[in-house]
Image (tube, rainbow, N blue to C red; front, side, top):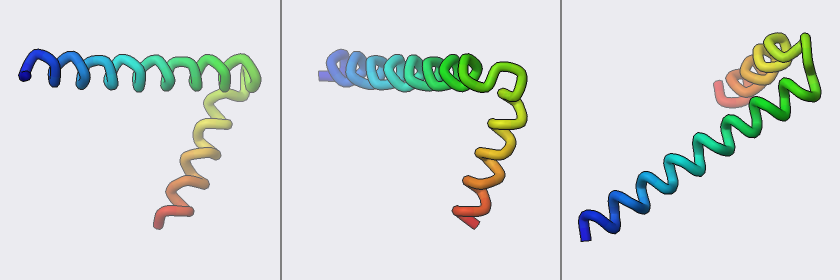
Length: 51
């Protein structure tokens, strides 16, 4: 039971990391030199939305 749970948790973590890397690669490919500014604007918007 513990082994199966550990495998499921590790699978979810690996999928999450893969999606994050794919998102960052997509942003880098579309924004190129503007990647850092795009990420700063996104997180500014996100924090404004939350707070």
